[in-house]
Image (cartoon, rainbow, N blue to C red; front, side, top):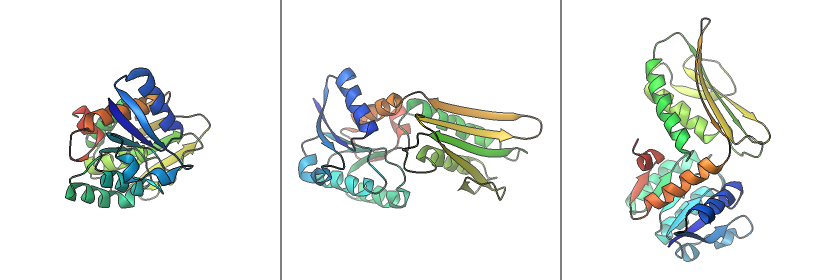
Length: 240
């Protein structure tokens, strides 16, 4: 039996627990951490689990991961908006032989979308099109833009020399990618990459219909990571 600690028991954590109960008879949730019992997110409690799945908040993700490292259990993290500490966590993970799998989005479809975006970015290099990224999420989402939109922008920058940076909700210098963040009720997540000129438009879109895709991807990642050491991404799970 794979014992799971859920760090963050909001909508995503509850969806993960639901899918584990319904679809994974060899897994069980042995610890649930939320804002009401955050003091229980300690190495002592975490050692009762074989793996942790962390979906908390930008303010708590860093310390939660450090507690998992201290407990010496692998952690799968999907919290976004704490990018300043990510390089520190990577370094600690490798130095101390810990295990972390971090992704801005665990959906299988989104990770395939990432690969399409990289290919399209390379093909569009030096073409006379105006690029923009649009993301739409539910009004309760804490970070803006989404971590997925940031990943999309960074992948374009790495694969297209026309762009060096991105900015939020504005279009100024041509080397900056404008990322527009929209918040609407009951939208799990939509991401659109558009290249437009006066003649035509090229566009790729990923639309999530529910949280289940994100949650099931995180569960699959948690099963894959057990027994491994180091820092991993979702592309490692999917062999992309």
